[in-house]
Image (cartoon, rainbow, N blue to C red; front, top):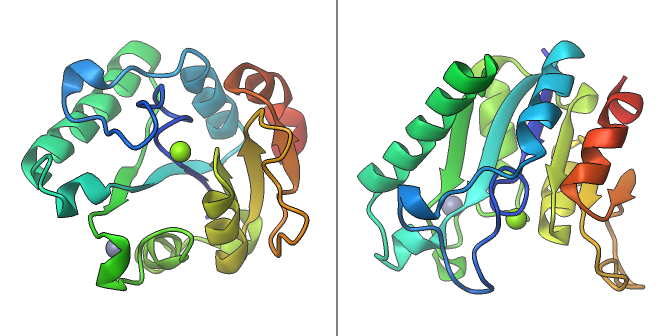
Length: 181
Ligand SMILES: [Mg+2]
Ligand SMILES: [Zn+2]
């Protein structure tokens, strides 16, 4: 099957302030355009997964149970209020010093999901707001979309390049069907 991997903070939900984290359900606000984006990729025959780095677990700012509850609530709301399915939210709980295989820009979460669900990575996409999302997607063999308005987001020496760039989720919503069809 083909899949769209979504980054979480900044794509699925409004991003927390720089170097802060979403630590409760109240702080988790779905991006206004996200349900329509999820609907569009679902209609194109993609399954959807979220892959997110949550170092806040490693830093003991939130426990896994609370994080899982936030994610269960997200999936439930999308199902009940929008009638669309988000297959699973996968997260890396580690910090950079743990040298795990799952923390983006490493492609471990995408590769694990591919094995478990039988995903064809070459017909799949990674959508995120950081170049680490682009790198993780490219290293897994996916095509990628970068959602970021910063003019200097792609450095001149960048090794991994996105297939599409757009400034915000509203623009993604406008273009996603044409890009993924
Ligand atoms: Mg992000
Ligand atoms: Zn990890």
